[in-house]
Length: 469
Image (cartoon, rainbow, N blue to C red):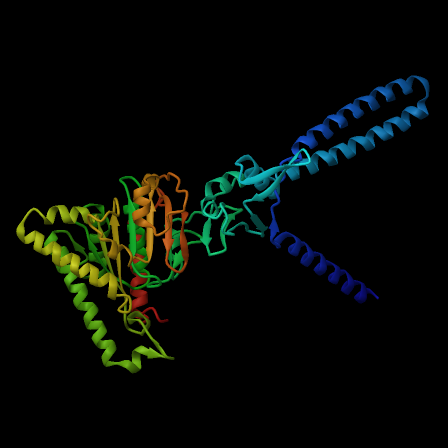
């Protein structure tokens, strides 16, 4: 009997969980009402107060005449008070609910058509919204039916964010709908220390990608945006994958002195390239290395083809990635164009950079370019299209032209960001730009010790024969 009772209880609990999940996660349609119940709820609340006052007065008067009648009056007064409390709680839940907030947004912004029927205004057509609430997110679907609200469906990010009091996490658009995803809980911001603990390239708790999938990173941001700090962190993360690093730093700044010289001491090869001729030479060597790798792969098809798939260079044991970091490309161009020889070096460098962006993925060569502004003055449009990761940091996000040059989508309501925050888009991972907070570098961080750990992992990966393990 006890076993049977336990089974019955377990079945009841399972049924309750399934039914609660179904009712919570199913897609609901918002049906706007011109006569939003908040008006009626205020009227009902006033009636409650009036009746409550009458009952109190009656109880006081009855107490003077008949104690039993007064006790009964107090009982009903208590019951009425409990009903009133329940009503107020229900009212607050409703007025703070998703359905009500979306109705209010549609009605207050007049996203509807109406006509008078029998002396009463009725809605005849409106922007159709559907929503689903899960454990982690609130998903809003703006439907596209080819009516006058069709274009509006992809421009609701800011309004929905304000209505729900949540930050927009992701937006995806199809022919029939636009889906907005609002995380219910803020991401935990990563620290620099956290980024050395995984085999992916991590930008935040929820944003990461594998080496080469997709390839190449374009990172833009004005002064004091956290751009250089982010590049330093990316260098450390690529080191932990066993990647060879080349730092092309025409400004001869902290990337050279804080990171580059340290790596040259620990890794035993040239890392830093500063002058236009050094930078052009480094890119030339990278293209030569890419072509060498392609030749090795072509000469050894049995090694580089597995299960009908062509492996990348670093997927084979004993091979390692190569990462080229070019910071402040405009500074490179400005310095190079002061002499005839410099101009020639610059033209050669840009030609080689273009070749790397287009062809180097299979050779496991990755390019990171850091700029203050991703304008065509340095990065032509055809080059920008070959960056799989685009990250824009700092107050530059308030400049729509900068956002347009960085991202393929123009339908995002970009907000002005602070140091270390911005928007990111990753091909095949995050199709629409989304807000992100990059790893935090604390004042207590031991910079030397941090890169020592990254270099130790570099050698550990190298001694274990590459990324394929």
